[in-house]
Length: 222
Image (tube, rainbow, N blue to C red):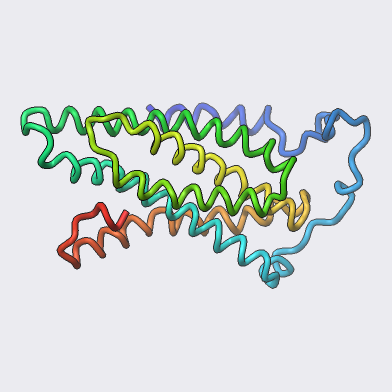
C-alpha cells in the first residue's frame, strides 16, 4: 500500500512541484525581486570536498543521524530488557507493544515541533550554537531512555528525543546553506544525504555486534 501511494505521488512531484519558488514568481520575505545571493554561482563538488568545514558538517550530520537511528532501533529492546522481571509473562508482549507504540507516537509528534521551532531559533541565535545544543540534547536522551520502566508511558524521553530528532534533521540543510550559500545547498545535500543513512543503518548493526560479543544485553549499547 505504501509503495502504491509513493508511485501515485510521482505525477504531483513531476508536474506540480517546483524546485525553486522563483519559477512561480515567488521570492523570500515577499519581495518583488530576487535577493542578491541568488545571483551567486553555486560552488562545485570539487570545491566542497576540499573544504574542511564541509567535512566537519558531513561528519557531524552522519554521527548525529547514526545516533538517532540507533536509539530508534534499540528503543523496543531497551523496553523489553526493563520489563523482563517486572511484568507477568501473559501481559508481557501486549504491554511491550503498547509502550513502544506510545513512545513512537510521542516522538513523531514532538519531532514536528522540533522542526518548526528550530527554524525560528536559528533565525534568532547563532546556528552553530543551536546545532551544538541539539546534538547535546540527542545524547542526553539516551540516559533518560535507560531509566524508562514500562508499562509507564515514556513522556519525558519521547518529548525530548523527538524534539532533538526533528531539530537535527532541520539543522543540517540550514547549516549547509549558512556555510556555502543557498545556491550550493542542493550539491551539499547531494553528498550528505547518501552518506548519513550508512551510519543511520550501520550504527544499530554495530551496537548489536558489540552486544553479541559481550555478556551485556543490548540496552547499554543503544
